[in-house]
Image 1: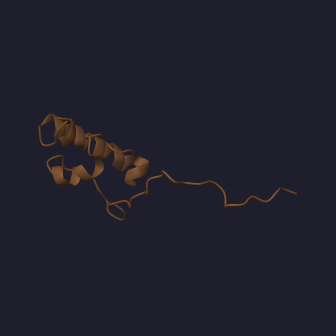
Image 2 (image 1 turned 180 degrees about the vertical axis):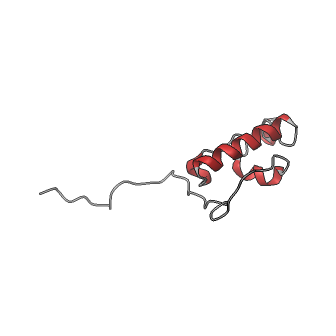
Image 3 (image 1 turned 45 degrees about the vertical axis):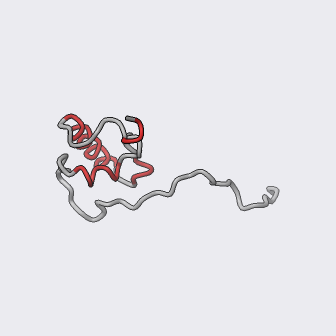
Length: 86
């Protein structure tokens, strides 16, 4: 028999809450790189692209979002570095 643990298991104090998938139930074929306000949801305040576990996207949609963000950066619709680091 295993010993009983107190406290209910592991503590998760610094784990960020997973966001719901914004594309759930929709057949997304193309994510427009010109919609910079929409793409800013997938970057942090430093301008880094958030990982899939935080955005809640599927792997395919995460690849599409990353590609759109990189295109938007290249075309100067989005900055490479966040506002606080300039």
